[in-house]
Image (cartoon, rainbow over all chains, first blue to last red; front, top):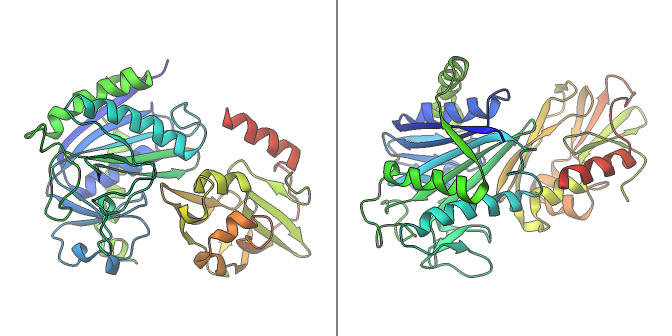
Length: 242
Length: 132
């Protein structure tokens, strides 16, 4: 079995966070990679195709990036952010996009259960966290989303490129001013931090998906690419291109 | 049964020679993969302006479904003559008719040879192999 690389980068800059994820997506010779990270400063990320004008919170955001994954805007605060970069023919991503979400969300749900919540795939139900006109990821949902308390609590999106996939996920540990009344761990495990949630998620990926991890770091080429690619994600020409 | 009048790439685009030009689109497999069988799951598509030169395998556009953004890749090299921009606002066409009305690009091919691409039978097998 291939051993995955686990990269952990807490409190990193928005440019570094997005640049490293794209570098990992490009890094076809590297081991499959799971990355846990958080943001400093708290940052609003737009989905790849979103119009700035469609996200009212973006108008006066102090820190703003555009992701290469799709979906809605996310306020990266009080959350564990993760990314997966792997070849599309890996068993985790084989089959349909929906099947890959079910596998990954199964592992996330297992980790969340350890913290006292009972997440489920949304399915056909209507959520109390739906809000029109905000452009925010957590205010709209699809049937594959993980929900608890009738609210969306995990945001996720994929970028598929040249036989590889970058899978972004945001697991909400606490509420943020821009997202409001969504599902978080606040009511049941207040004080959970990205650092304290990450080991549970690693174990869930191991137990639920049969993966093995070894702590690692980006290699020199990936670090250089991250720095180079990262500039684009905060460049107004890219961030405000739509 | 997929049409026999065109060839297919491993990244799920098709190309069909049409006189001096070639039409390019994405396959039913790609649409199903992206949309999970629901028209409404396809949300955005960006296609290139006419005049752009594409090399074989180059990314010419991007398509977003509810859960994934994917590249669109040119199966052969050539110059973009026309993009079917109508589908950018009507992505359901890709589900209804990926082989006809859902075409994406008309290009002037560098070469008319489609060597190296799969015929319908080979593409059927390829799709079956990656599903399981």
